[in-house]
Length: 416
Image (cartoon, rainbow, N blue to C red):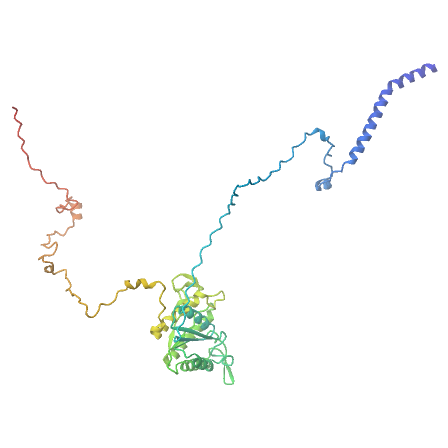
């Protein structure tokens, strides 16, 4: 019995031997594959994989011989220039054409005996002086001299004394015309003697009138022409109302001493009399006249301010205020109509009246004759009521009458 059992076990081992050999081979193969995969770098996990877990499928090692070799990129070589061959010039992009700047205005030199216009006052006078210099830049016979203090006025004579300063300016420059513009800084209390008077009280107004009259009389002491320019409106409603009061005082006190008050108010308000930042310039174009603060004037505003004073200065200075000749105007002298000479024969003809036909040899006017009799009804009434169409006059375009042709008697042809 023992030998039979041992023989059975031996047969079983012989039968299971291939199975054990196959299992051992699989273990050895798996071991070497694990070592090969461990040598590859582990793939980096994404943020999604870190939050929710899981890995992307690992990239298996691929045999490079499984893929065909890729061709190398072809290198582009620059063609060499052959000897004797001319190099083609590069085409440059056309640059955008910049508009030509307008030519600068010609500078007119002032004549040695040019008459001077003295402009004095506060910051408004400074703007007025700038505008007058532009207005007379082509006038060789006029020089504009500006002596302005932007923060000055007639109230704070302790800060700047205009009566004393004006005398020195007149003696220094010897002007032919004096232009004054003051008042924009005078809306404040005034010291009268030992007391300080509040703005726009009765005592304040009376003292202010005296100071305006004294300064105007000082400017007129040598019989010099005085042009006192009024204040413009401002963006502040209260300040504008005070400027209206000041302009009334200037008008009355300046005319007392023989000066001239120039009102510029309408040039800086709209049709309803309200303050405007933008308005018409001297050419009628809509431009910005005042600064963003509603007080100062722009370049166009300064020129418009000077426009109101320029015409009076030209009237006072006469021929000295004539502008220089425009370059190129010599060829236009033949187009100017000149008065006839004194010894030139002038043939005078009497005027021809429309009621006197004998001047051309006729005895009757065109269309003369007795007027046709009318029944009081127009051709339209006759057409609507009775259907009558008036006959058109002979020869008019709507005269469709045809002359009756003459009757022609034809004779039969005789046959031979």
